Length: 430
Ligand SMILES: Cc1ncc(COP(=O)(O)O)c(C=O)c1O
Image (cartoon, rainbow, N blue to C red; front, side, top):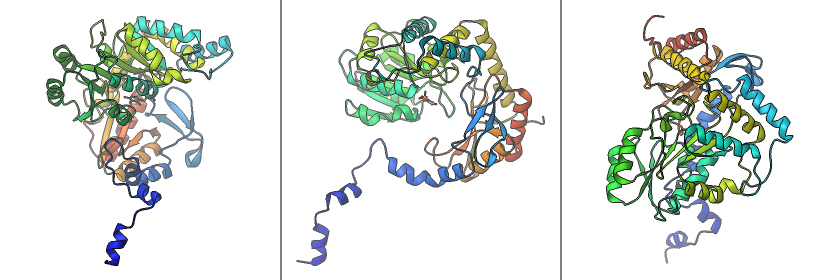
């Protein structure tokens, strides 16, 4: 026998078999992502653009605490505190008072066992505010982790498993669960906001659940009225992660998605949202439509089996923020945000121009050029997020800017000038 053939046929050791695995990866490829992005992450860290340590000072200012820019003050355009509530005196006081009252920060136990009485109060008040059955979590990511397998199980849809359709741009904290969901049911991914593709799938399958963001963290939003029409026509189940849309839309800050829905959420819609972005406290939440859903979540959602409750400071802060959401201050802050968005749009051209959402992406293209761009902005006193693959597509890197109600206009004007100077493209003379 030919010796080479013999060598080819020699069985692989189990270690070699692991390393040479050619099993196709359908939903995740962590190894490839690291291989493709390592140079960009390394460079962004080296330039002091990632893993920045700082202290908050006045308003949106931060004092950098380490590395080569130690002691520098910059204006932050990274935090998603769109209404500027994260350092609101009432929110801070709510957190301190809660700690003092309870004398503890965190209970290491499952929510299926012990719950702080205060989380009951928070959930009741959020439920009234947003006309839904609200459950609070320590983060939105944790809320999503619990929710998606339950939807896939079919127990929210009359014991019939839905085909789960993900928008291609659904947030990483949703897409991450595709392999787990695929273990329960069929998973499809469609192009961003592709209603035709979604309708085709609805025509083919009796039960379909669609998973998307309400407001997308890299710009854009879900077509809520059209999704509701598909729901009416085909019974489409909607899971909408409105982490970024909460507080900045709606009379009581019910969010981008909830404010476009009927009073009754019904049995085919769940909305996830953040307590830590526009809301200004910390944590995440789910808005559910029925008692049956709530009972299932409180028993079977995985985070309920562990200590995934917001801690006491977060609960106190969130209850204080409900007070602000129930007062005239909310509308005032919402309009201050809109004024800043309009001001920015009048000066800097982005693909999000004109949308009343606070996220703007200045597209650069090349990853290293985007890193240069963000570093020059930081040296001029503006901390923005440099974004590249896997957050956005390869070759479409850019700088993300989160506008808030408490950015001051003079500062914003300087940021816009800094961006336009680098791009050489002012919309009009300032
Ligand atoms: C749509 C969406 N969902 C979830 C998250 C994660 O939220 P959290 O940090 O509360 O886990 C984000 C992050 O910004 C997001 O954009």
